Length: 406
Image (cartoon, rainbow, N blue to C red):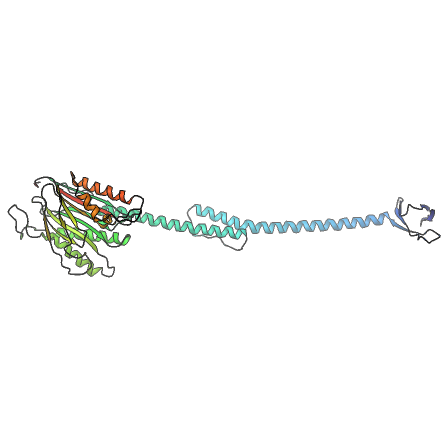
């Protein structure tokens, strides 16, 4: 079936049945025909639509223009949002970078601001944690530096060189458990030619005991030297020329005790201390053992005598009573003193070294006081092995190697 339709311009368009809907385009218009004929209709019905090409172009141009404007606005908004979020992220990162440069130059006083809970905020928090760690590390290094200075100063309080006497040998060892120690030993010459010998252990550990170690050592030396001035003027001599009366220098123990107990009683610091004054010519030693570990005098046969405490620790109570003891050192005799860091040394299985082990070593034959010290030291440190060392190891020994003349 086909039909002819007149257009508005007076022309005719032919529509063929079965080809509907159909489109027809002229120079300035576009036509569309839709067949709406029903099954029962005797005639054919067609609806035609016509649009001006110029009008459609305007619509399209307007739509394109609108879309272009929309696209430009979207791009601008996207750019602004991108810049905003980029600055929001980059500004804290730039701040952290700047702070990192200051930290690299040693300034640990600054911190990054944590303004959000996102990844950037987490980065700032981690940076601040790092700063806190660096501050703690700096504090620890400063403490270590000060402790090292304290160790060097404390070493100055120990005798840089032990007295060299003809027919006598003095040996010592000192191994602090930490940077500083409460143990100390001393050997110094007194007026009249006698020799002062000290080994002591200040209570507690750390810096406090180290400071008191310096105080105890200085007081013993000063009081002993002052008290020893004029020694022998009121002392009696024995048949072999040895001093029978106790040397005045031993008053240093009582004087030190009273000074500490009266002036530093609030700190409750005290020291176990052995102080002996040796007459090198006769081999006679007068001593005070103020609560210290027993000392041993040995000869070629074994342990000859034990020097037990003769009074309380120094600094506990004012006006404490200290009994003076006396021992005679013959040729070949060795006097051995130590601190409890030796006997209380612990093995990896938490076993104590004990006095019995120490005595079993001391009873062995030794050619010199230095050899005895080295043997005990080696045994103690082999016993400790990899176990932590909690106490200082200090020993002092003196041997009479000859007749006693200078």
